[in-house]
Length: 193
Image (cartoon, rainbow, N blue to C red; front, side):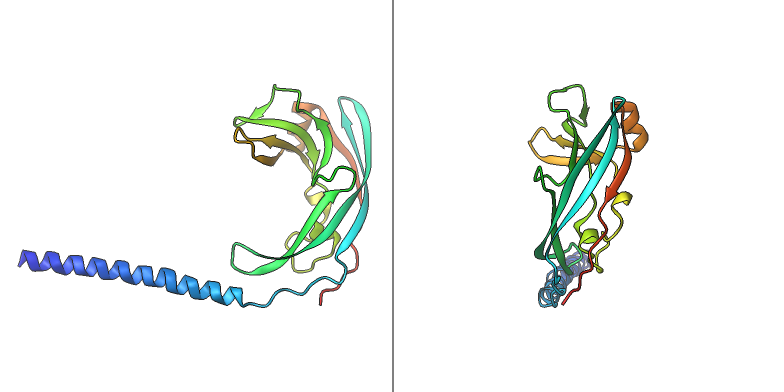
């Protein structure tokens, strides 16, 4: 009797695992196939834009101004983590080719690390290409000032690059830096076909 119950329990457990694996692979595979064949979002009529900006900030009591241009380019279609497709954009600063506005080089200062990562540069984020290019379907189609903070570029011990943000109070306290004025270009009129 006990042997029959044990065998029945093992068979039931194996059946449950097989059913779970079936649903995991078949259902998720079907979902991936559906998203693979989902239509691509419409492409933008305007795929390239240049957006002048002026950023005024104070560093160690000295007022500094950066005048440059944000470059935005359409970069095709990408899959999101949720399995849908969306437009992909590139954004960089014209004079440097970087995605951030450089405010202060810290590569020679070894006094600041963050979780073992060396901080290389203080910078400011210029906003999202989705805003400038007026992508109506993107969460990132929001004013650049909503994201304009003092950030820092760091390198991990493994050599990977990352960014993290200070609050305005932390940036002022730690590095005596604050943004005074951020003048950015308005978004373009764009259509998607």
